[in-house]
Length: 201
Image 1 (tube, helix red, strand yellow):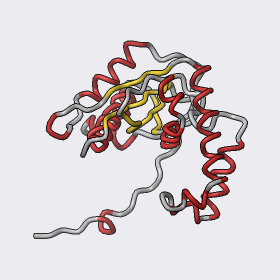
Image 2 (image 1 turned 120 degrees about the vertical axis):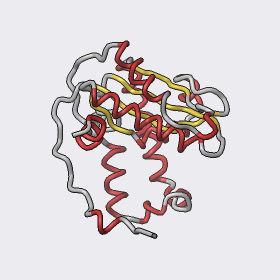
Image 3 (image 1 turned 90 degrees about the vertical axis):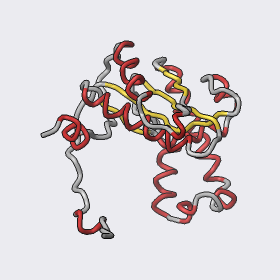
């Protein structure tokens, strides 16, 4: 099988990591792969914030839980933005996340990389391409990863955004954790091609 296709099909989201540091040169190589992603008008709109400080990652995790808890208390207001808050299963899940004792945000991963960008059209799409490049490059080197959507909640705390070095006028486009997998889950079944493709012509 083509090595690129093989990597794409075998990559999994990892939420259980070995207590082992990822060498700086590997992190830099992963970021370099991200920089080669396509971007609108070749703007290359991404900036990277690499966090390997375990205490800081834990602090960020607790802040995210706090922000989720605040949102749940004010969910009437937030329903306008997140219709999912009308779903009882989603509410139960969010309550569990907010009250969890363990780090179920960053899963105690040794590395968290924030991709931040300015508020400009197509920047987030460009950063998503960058993030996928990084996850695939990592997998090819034996490093697991997982996109952490909950990291966006940090935007609710300006001081925390300043603490991790997000520049003014920028927002969190993506956050990915990296580390050596403690185990690799089996791949879920994919939808049949006939169910998701429409041919014209």
